[in-house]
Image (cartoon, rainbow over all chains, first blue to last red):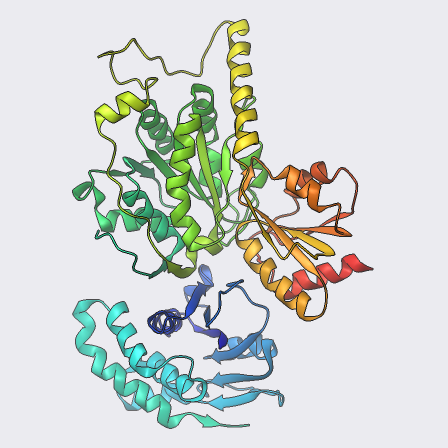
Length: 181
Length: 360
């Protein structure tokens, strides 16, 4: 098993922490992992992205030209990363603010309206966990139980009371993700 | 700071900080600069002065930090600085003084795009600066190029070992990829800091008072040219010994390779992925990864170039290490370069295309 994943969206959407939680969950499953953020000015107001690789075998490059899974959370990220999904790979996008939806027919396209769901749950911060839940429903990169373990690891103690809310968000994501093609 | 073999997930910059505490480092001096500020931040968070007595100073500038390194080295302490490219440029005077005064010390450069203030994204544009001696005079420093978070941790102790063995500054030449990425790492075991008695025994040259020994003079200044030449000759003898004994490198799939990639640090990681892709296309490509950039694995490249049709130097710069490769190859096979600059990092596919271009 080797999942080469790009997660991309606006700065502030929780893209980097979603990647970090995924990487920690991989660590807990005894897998090889890398987490490589595009650090810098794009974090502040522009687009943010992180490459996460979870693999049974040693990982060579933390930087990739193509991806098995692309999770794109805004239009600029969709435009940039849709062409970089491997044929037969998976693209997951949030419909919020998307004017030009994915075009490719040689990849599996999933839609998750996580922005809307987070608003419904009245907790906009749970957005990234809804997306992660949806992703794991279709990709099975890591087990949900290890994601919860990763939340314990990455969240400061003072935020641990929010973990049940995050679990609900993960569950919500699993329910609402839909396959478009 | 319990001692165990737990596998942790952390950034390369964080690994350097943890490794420094664990290998008995006496002091860190630094001034924040992206992409390496996590070194100082992690040390501040870990508060090693409460654990091992290691001091951590946020200096007022890079010039101050490198001269604190000089001072720490002069009294036989295991001391280090870290910075990124423009900050390292500021430190060159101090590094040359340390080389002249034969002082140990660790300098970590987590490179970013240049020249000048440049960008904050990854680059390997400081190869020349690191391997040619960025300051004045005839000197070299040992340069180690970590290619993983694990090596970021492991090379701290190794650097100190080499720095004291040869009484020379040692540089870890990393970049924003290895500094910022998170990867699995097992931290080195806890080692106590050296006691004053141990420093006295191991560093008779240290300027720590005359008790039990004669006076120690630490300087890079000598007014008599004849004596300065003798000092230079003794430095050159030391550099020859380092060249003979301390070359480190790693080979990857070179046995049957028709084409050889030479790459260090983060570029070697990306190139390794390119080799996986090339091999799946039936292209026999291997890699030599210099771990020490100075001393450079000249003899190994000389040996390997007899078996390959061409060499590709993959660097995240305009082509700097390629000069050392060409000196090793002496025109026997074509040597090409592929790289990006200014903070742009090549993807594996770009390197595959560069290998394919070599074939025609």
